[in-house]
Image (tube, rainbow, N blue to C red; front, side, top):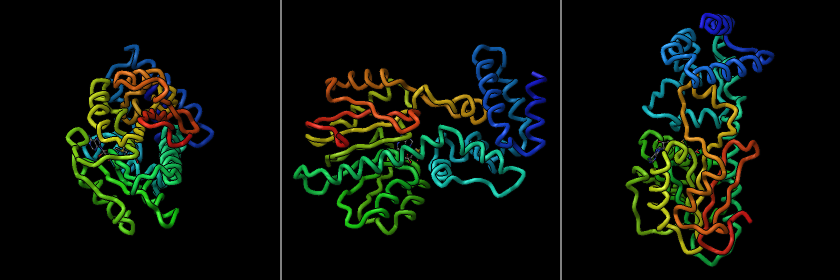
Length: 304
Ligand SMILES: C[S@@+](CC[C@H](N)C(=O)[O-])C[C@H]1O[C@@H](n2cnc3c(N)ncnc32)[C@H](O)[C@@H]1O
């Protein structure tokens, strides 16, 4: 352990890694992660390493924000928004840590998934299925930066959104961000598991929620919202893939644990909701780190 502590002490002393040291830090995190998984490093040792980081693991850095979870749960709207905005600290003592954080594949995949959603929404808007007012259900809507960009990027948007979100702070933040477009977005302050409505949706989207759920809850929530799909509706659920190279950093430093799932696992979860093979497809953002499970009721997938 002493050599691990010494490595970290050196980095902390110089205010975080320079870009020439990124590779070494990433390999070191992989080693720590492997040693933790095999029991060479204990939970207590991990705590010693985190203690060694001092202010670098305070709420003032992105990694510290992830670790401390000031909103009481992982993946809150504030950290997601900081990722979207590529926020980095102005404090020269801490900035290098944030630069390292923002360059990792997982934050990149989060930014890419926003674009994936925007592409899907743009394709949906172009399809003419004869339905009046295409309605989208956005489950776990967070900061709503995606919808802000969607409405900012195009005039005369026809889609209308119901955003389901359980954190009141996320809702106030998102309402303020989207205030110009508020007549197109309805916010529903409720837990997704309790959400019910008589409305039907052409698209149900959820990113950053299902990869916190075990398989039982994953299937339960799918079955809970599937009846809300229109006859030609599509449900799209994001989930991180085990090919996430940022996993050791997320777990070791940030204690940010997701249920990473392969394409095959996502496919089989969809099958257990009685969808036929041809009505299931798996997409991905350019890094292949965030996968998207598509399940359709109608003839074609939206982005085909
Ligand atoms: C990781 S963020 C994703 C936000 C947004 N979908 C995005 O990709 O930008 C997850 C959001 O889901 C919300 N959330 C988590 N569990 C939820 C639940 N069971 N019901 C409703 N909202 C939930 C959190 O409050 C948080 O704002």
